[in-house]
Image 1 (cartoon, one colour):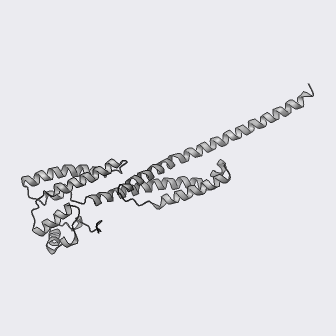
Image 2: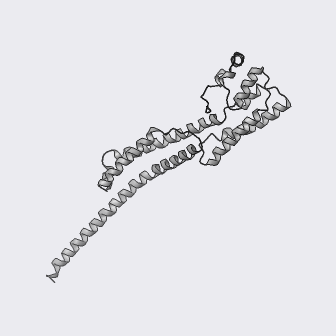
Image 3: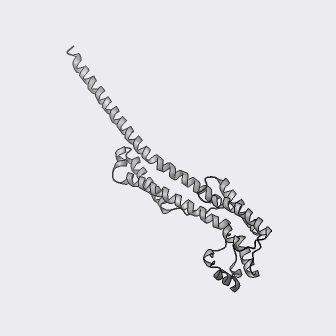
Length: 241
């Protein structure tokens, strides 16, 4: 019995050592799981937004990627390299790298969302820059043809505008916006503006996608000034050569 005691003590010590190792490994695994969970939400959000950006860009919606997206990618690469050197939770927690990564992720999410919305609303102007129904109503004679065209225009314009309240998550929304823009151009061709010839030509061009500077004659400028409408128009480069 006495001879067996040292062996029993040694075996117990070894068992306790193994248990201590298992406990340490369990704590390390738990710590890593917590860190993984902290990062998962923002990482998934950024990935989803980047996919959305790629989809929109492929459909002709110009999106300017924010600098914060590049910043979070660089930060993530730095943290990843440090973790590869020593794969412990303490490596991630050391210094401000981890907290900065989470903060950069939140900033990138906010900036990408804003960039997507800005790009989507710019796309609206690109596909159709015609006037609102209320503006057109003040410039046309109340003939049966004009009233009918205005009612149709108002319905389509309402649907068109509603599409640009939020950034689309599917290609179908973008294609619908293009179709509605085309419908608005078609409907606006039926308006008979109660103005002079040069102004009528200018307004018709605006409704059809944009008026060239050549149509901005003295008569048109005077009409715009008299109707306090100069602030309602802007000059932008044509997408056509």
